[in-house]
Every structure is written in C-alpha cells, then in structure tokens.
Image 1 (cartoon, rainbow over the protein chains, first blue to last red):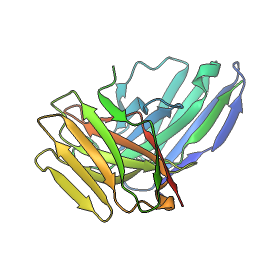
Image 2: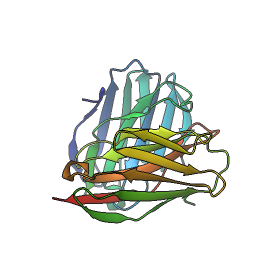
Image 3: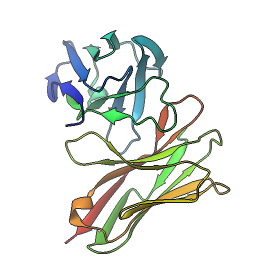
Image 4: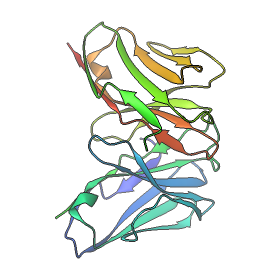
Length: 115
Length: 111
C-alpha cells in the first residue's frame, strides 16, 4: 500500500467513449502528477498540479483532460482516444515543489486499452 | 530528446551475482538522482537516491556509484536474489524539480 490509490485498475474503451481515471492520495501531499508508461519507453510526465493549480502540461493532446478538485484527488478525463494511447497511466504525489530529496510516491496504475 | 540514457535494456544474472545498471545524463543542472524499482502490476517505488556531492551511497545490497565529471551513475545490486527481479529506472531531478526517467532495465535473477 503506497498511499496513492488509482481506479479503475483496468479499463477498455472504444475510441468514441468518454471515461475518467481517478487518483486519491492519503499522504498529505500537495503536489500530484499523471505519468504515462508505455512499453520500452521512459516514463512520460503528462501533468503536474501544485496546490490544486496546474503547473505543467507536457504537450499532452487535448483528448486528455486533467482535473484536480483538491490536493488529495486527481482525475484524468479521456475522450476520443486513439489506440496508441493504450498504456499504463500512473498517478503520483509528493510535497509541492518536488525539491531534491522529496520522494515521489506512485500509485499502482490504471491499465488503459483503447480499441 | 532523452536526457537520461539507461543501459542495458534487459539483464539476466545468476542468483548471488552482481547486477549493474548504468545511466548517463546530459543536463548539468540535475542535482538529485533516484533509482526506482517496479514489480509487475505495481507502480515504481523509490529504492535509493544520491546527490552529486558524494561518489557512492550504499543501502544494504544496493549501491549507487556516481561520477560527476563523466555525468554517469550506476546501480549495483550485490548478491542478487530472484526477488530482485523487476524493472529498474534511474531518474534525475533538476532546476524544474521534475523527474526525468531513464528507459528502464528489466532485471531477471535466475534461481
């Protein structure tokens, strides 16, 4: 148990569907992240929220829409995805500012398959 | 552009052997270098980390060696065990305070 909970763990969706991934952290952190993990590629940072404010959007297509209603919850809304978007989506949290020595804690991920 | 290059992509080691994973970076602004361990079906978990002002850090069977002039760092797993079989990621943090990950090394320790 890492203190970062992601749901659902597995999701299969069609290209015209709308779905959402949910993340909740129980660590008292104030920074939250979405990462994408594809086979044989480095972990890709997608979005960063510090104190509920988005501070990083790493050139992510608009079919991915994040939402951070409070410091403990983070959503990733998915709409009209492509098959190449199939991947493991990881949520993470840390103390804001991600200073050297601040550990980033990851959830177990949501496996997304786009058909 | 990949700022942290990791090798090898996969590694097979006999039980009791030494596993060595190497990383090289380009950005001299990086000032913290963590290693993450990821088991199948799990998210990455922090394993060990080093700052560039030290050349080596050891925690149990895991050691990071750091060469600042060469901009390289490596993870050594001594007395490797089958339970160490996982994917290992090196990473670096710079002035932007965001993690940049290597591409990962899939380690298999044979019993």
